[in-house]
Image (cartoon, rainbow, N blue to C red; front, top):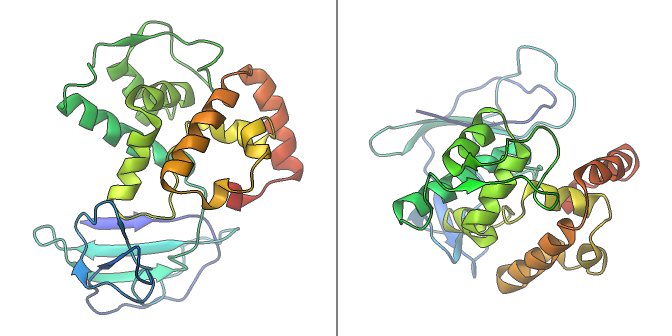
Length: 252
């Protein structure tokens, strides 16, 4: 088994290293230096610590621009223990972009298993739920929406599913895994409305970046209401100006 997280960046030096065991820490502890239980499913109320120290990852075969964040591990398929690992800036923070759609699918499958959502439910595309990029036809089943979300990275399909399972249900995936610095609570349109400066809620508070728990849930619901007010083409025009002149990675 191979666990891999990567973004483009500068090459590093090659090396190999010893066995590494992942640990977890409770929220009350220092998530970098403490924690004594092996990680499987940390559960709400605990955080994964920073990645263990491992040798530098090998240089990529071709030069890359930007910042690299990488942690690659060979994992025992039975015990899930890490056999060996390499990394480069593994604890850096990056926008999740479309990788967050896997968590939306996870939340949806849980709802299927619990009998709370039917794969045959159908949805229409409206002004308030259409996101940027391509989008599905009206009357598409939630099963087909999930296929478009993963196969085509369809943002509108993602947003429809995210709202159907509930904003907090997707955030719960990160919280259960101990990913305390990961925010999965927002559909795609909401992030872009925030970045484009169109959310009065986001513009009126400086607490979003550090908000957790009930406060984060409350702000997310208000920002979601803001996001439903605009046409997708208007959001696109405003967003272009943001990425051209005002981009701030910490916002997302």
